[in-house]
Length: 198
Image (cartoon, rainbow, N blue to C red; front, side, top):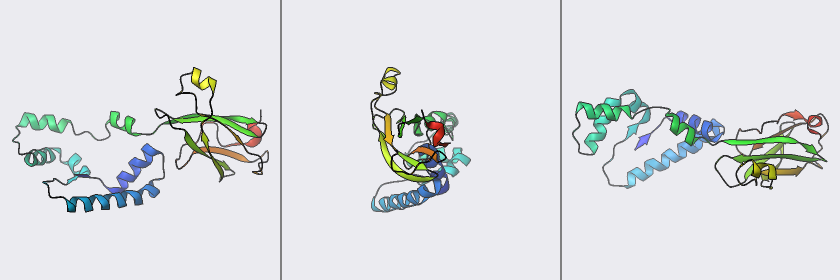
């Protein structure tokens, strides 16, 4: 069972999920506590591993893992095992991170228009609109857009056309759209309302 430093877990999660590391730190601590409770309840051979120690002492980690499995390994086998221990493996990092794409296109008749999707996921993305830094509403990017479909962007069902009527937006109001609960802001966000008028 591999354990990681909680701060490292929170920071890695923040990178991959585009969230606030402090917010995830408490969730990670609860998860680790639940895992410890599970381990206490089972009666199986186990090896407790510190991720950071395994990276620092890979030979000892390989030997401990072999002992747990009841195997005797020679120097060549140990060397092959140690070669598999690579921090920040590029393939893993790339596959573990959530990736979003989209754009805030403009304001058309008091309707904020754009698109957003999570790469590789079919479900619509929930977005938050902030006016002058205060979240004023939340909505889904789930409207069909032929330009997206023709460009092969998912199934094309990633658009939005959200009314901002009644939000008190004035020409100097700064508008920003981000994925709900994430730190990803749509490209084009952060401008004054008058800059979006079309």
